[in-house]
Length: 276
Image 1 (cartoon, helix red, strand yellow):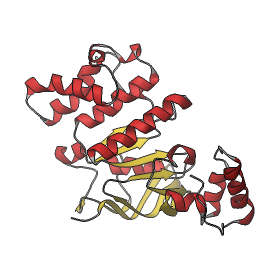
Image 2: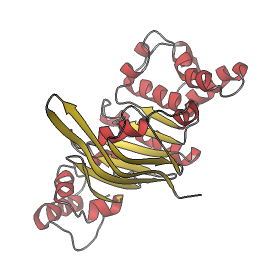
Image 3: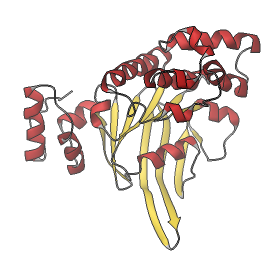
Image 4: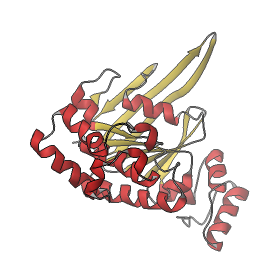
């Protein structure tokens, strides 16, 4: 079995708007290894969301190849393949049906994909709620009655209900305050390790993923400008754009402040001491 779960080769996407073409992705080679959290970091318009949408089958690529578990992955894909790749969106309030009770929302993937006996699915919903740190009684509530952090935990439980191999996390904590954000990130890390999941974590903020990501790919203007382990990216960034992103990361100590100053001023570090 290959170590690589997801691979793109020369993946490109061109959007046509009238007489104007926008190249949202430009010959992107990108690998995601089994069991890792691979963060995709970049500013708005960098191509990271386009990459996520192609992985999810929302967009098709203009050219290039996408493989999942060693097999070609196209926009039109069988239901079984859709089940294996799930999404947790940025805003859980808009991603959950406001008229549907929480339990039914979490149960929906099980019903759609025929997972488990029908009589067991209610019990499974309760188990999933507990797994993401919520009380089973919340199955009877609606999204509007929950906090933002609770709603995002519900969205995570719904993704888990499909028993996926890969979860695409699209800015999953950007709508949350800092304290809740930290708790959700800790939950995601635990779930990945406990379940052997693989994550593609889309974000504009390097600070969010520096303690969570195994590897980080930095995108700018549709290109992957750099990929490395989290330590490599933070201690010895190769691309100027990456150095700019790190320069905007909040620091927690005088040592980190000195490290960030060296990155800004020298273009490349020499001592290799990690920020994270």
